Image (cartoon, rainbow, N blue to C red; front, side):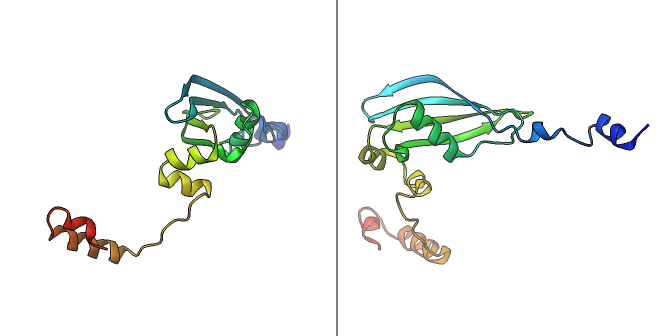
Length: 146
């Protein structure tokens, strides 16, 4: 009888090869070409057994290679949820035809995340003061305040 085998039996120690498993499989579902918004859109299923999550940068890189995208920055992925028990995550992906379309159609917060726009730093106090000034005005005058 050895304590190390008893601990391993009870699950206190993990096998080293299970911890270093870094492979992940990417599958796309509901793939659609959206000509109006100059993009391809899809649901992204990522299988990653033995890993907590997969970095978005790594997924962007793999998607760019999969769909022959010239610029990795044209790939936007977001909204990932990990399934209960782990091993699988599902999110949404967009591949824009070019960087101009990306900048035109993506919302501001995703442009900031992608590093294509700088976040505007406003103090909380200024935002609240402006809101209260606007509340006192009517009609088009609200647009003229700062």
